[in-house]
Image (cartoon, rainbow, N blue to C red; front, side):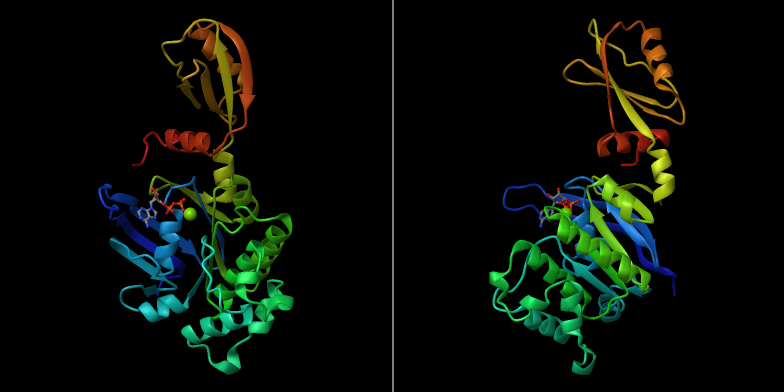
Length: 314
Ligand code: ADP
Ligand code: MG
């Protein structure tokens, strides 16, 4: 048995297109191992394939090919054990409107074969702050309360691995704090946590390790600390006095000509200073009319990370 919480090998997912639409390969052969006990971040822009990956782990989406092991159990060989090891809080707010939170948890416990004596619906409702709403109809719950209930449902069978798909997208501060407090508490108690986000800051704050996924492929995977030092990138945007034909090149600098005619130079502060970047620009015969700096966004980070390895994974 492996010591990984999750192990994914060569995972491919191709969605069949709707009528007249081409098919879409959302995961292009993903390999990923997630250690037990970690808070692991799956970071990537919209459409990167995060939910597809999560939903395959959860058994909600059927993979096209590849191998998935959860807590050492192969999804295809031991479907029951692998499913029992994981709880997923999905991105979509899909709840049965006819159940109260307590009722929904009881149904979920039944689905996972949790014996009555071992159920702890009230304890879980208290954990997510839904005790006062335990008996209310789900359709009377606010969006935030529904999210709390989805988290509660994911916890009913005491999974070894808890997966949260974009838990904080569009939620208020109070709910965000509740989520993070619970993530830390559950992780301290030994639960492995995987969360997806498209916010770099969130991943930085919460995660021990991060995989960056883009266009269905993992483009970087490292400890948060290592990744941050590799992401030590900044961008200088140069407005040239005259149109620029060639982008200056230099170590630790990635230049890009933008459609508005400006020149964006993303550089790694560990490699080169801003002054060095400007020397490079002047050295290329470019007259600088104006200049501003930008903090990196995910796009720049992808660029810096992929270019620093010499080749770009596809
Ligand atoms: P993310 O969660 O990172 O935003 P998704 O996994 O939701 O990404 O989507 C990855 C890609 O797969 C996107 O291009 C999306 O349009 C496509 N996709 C997702 N779900 C389906 C589906 N059910 N049918 C067809 N295409 C899908
Ligand atoms: Mg998603």
